Length: 137
Image (cartoon, rainbow, N blue to C red):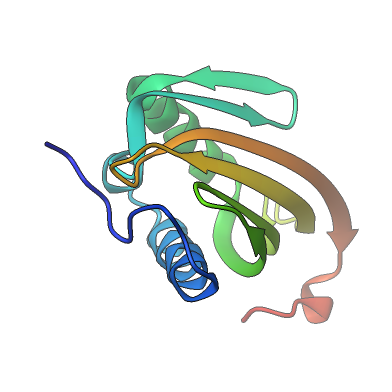
């Protein structure tokens, strides 16, 4: 049986741990490894995209990191319940043309009993920045 610790029900401490594990994984940019933190039938809303299951998650992430280069993410715990965690985040990247962006947003996560994320809803806004204004270098 697949499990991804920590498992629900979450405490503030385990919610923050789950948040940090997610941040680390996304900053390593390994789509196959990241997808293993999600249930086989996970549902995502990411901006205007609706993604279903690990296969689509992997394809989404592969495509993402061909367009969002030198991606660097910082997540911040916001709140939690027994099997849900809310985070805010910001990340920076540049596109293939060298234009830099900082993205801000919020994510709502819902986990199954095995600690796999079954729902991820992300609201994201991008801000054009100059390279010298980057926070994450």
